[in-house]
Image 1 (cartoon, rainbow, N blue to C red):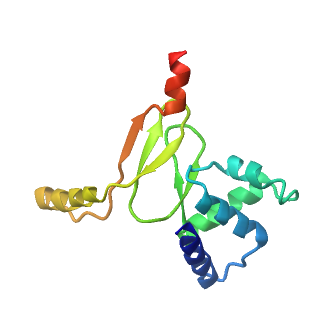
Image 2: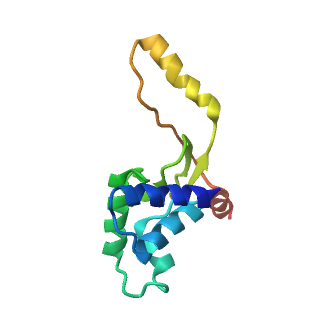
Image 3: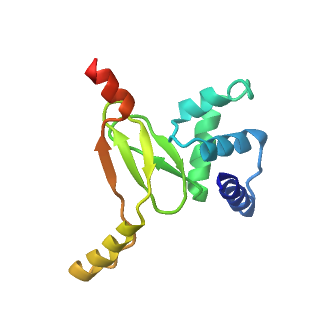
Length: 145
């Protein structure tokens, strides 16, 4: 499944005439394969062995460009460094307040919230965002010791 979405992202890039370099492909592939939402630094560290000449700045610049094209979202929560997420169908984020880990959470029923909000307020709703905060299992274990 992630492979199909990766292909769609690559097609979207081609349509904007952005050259697909091996680094760009690797960054995108990493984003689509990882279920966490990595920071630019984490992406850099994961790929530095394959691309010794690639800098953190290169990763940042590519992520910014992917964001402009609309295939990657930048998630900023509080003051921690930005995390990056592939743009996919509606999903929500459950965020650990201890370590900043973000996990996707799908709940299709929440789409009705927009309809209800329009009905109650008369607004024309364009989108919504929901964040759920808690403590991940790893941090819960650490806190118990």
